Image 1 (cartoon, rainbow, N blue to C red):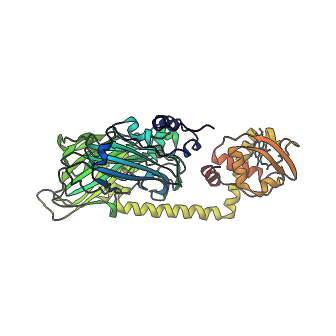
Image 2 (image 1 turned 135 degrees about the vertical axis):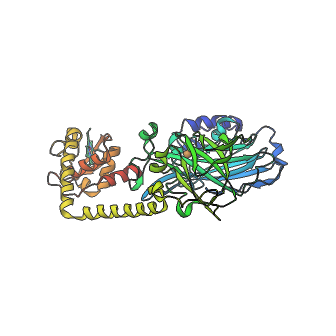
Image 3 (image 1 turned 180 degrees about the horizontal axis):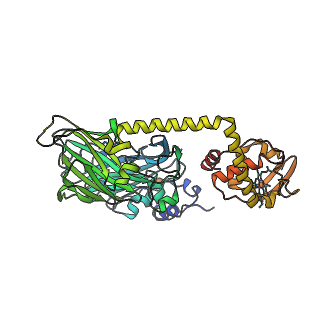
Length: 504
Ligand code: HEC
Ligand SMILES: [Cu+2]
């Protein structure tokens, strides 16, 4: 038997090692959740117990009214969800609480926080959490590595007040963060935050998709673009337009608006700016002593935050941007704050926002691009249905596929697809190939070994995985499925993409 060590302290010390080397999940499945009590843990037992109210952006939980410490229980669930990234574009986000950014957590300096991280059973991979508000190894990451369908518990004391980023720290970390695994935790100072009329939660993140910006359909993470820090999207609150049109932030003339703003990254720093406003008060980098007044643009690092506050004197629509403006106008880092109320012409006598200035990011532009994406998809579908076009497409695929066949497959399956008796099965006239084309896609992507029967004859050999793009795999299979008398139909790049994504 090779049981994990049973002594709790030893196990707690070993778990992070297991976690960070990404051992097979089986190694963890027999583990009990690890409870890490801070030194002097009995203290928590004397504290009043509270369950933290968590909110989805742009909402912020209510101010902590209490002026004494409490034991605060935080329940946060990790879920992998497919949602809108931009008009016509979907993405499978990895989330804390089903939302990007993750749910906002609010506690008070001196609170003892009992943290429960639950990873939903439908998740495909393990996750954990590193809270920058935590003083302790990995900010909690070491104690919170959680396989799908499991939950972890750890406890920390919120020693320092401030606005802190939290994020997933499971390998590959940039991918987990880019997929949406970041959020904010506010540790209020002992005497609380000064009151504000409106408090909002906004967070910026950079996203890397295989398709270019705006390409319709379900997009997947692109590791090369991420490594090169070339995002296809830079967004506020998880998607293009999350704070635009009827989802804009709201305020009334005369109110004080406070923005809790964070940058999840994983890579880009934000030049955070509100077009048409000046930050009256700023807590730079989320530190708790507000030290700046009258700031136009504030730099917010990846994995950092700021608290920006201003009184709104003039009605209108104010535009939140990353002032690296290509990100705002071309990649999505743009939001709106709508201020209603009486005009004060002395302060400003102008028209409303200029739809042209913010172009496709405006409410009207957003509707237009949804419609455009629909029409483009309709047109593509209509074109594909024209038989002549379908035939030409197939012919092009055949020629391209032949080239792939002659570089890779023919060495084993032979030039006429006839195979080699008892060693390499035939592709010409193969009943195995004919029966299930998606299985054939899988065979080419992942390789194939073990006993199979082709045209009544047994084969038990090994085909290595074939390293090709989705297009090349589609082309080569279309070629073999329509050569040497085969008439088995065609394979599209989309089908290959789906098989690759769905795995097995
Ligand atoms: C190094 C030799 C090798 C290469 C290269 C190779 N295969 Fe195979 N292929 C095999 C073997 C061996 C099997 C049977 C594996 C088994 O016995 O489980 C197989 C099985 C198959 C099958 C399923 C069985 C059948 O006859 O229908 C398909 C489809 C297939 N290969 C397609 C391809 C295509 C397409 C390529 C090129 C992209 C390719 N193979 C490249 C060795 C190879
Ligand atoms: Cu994660």
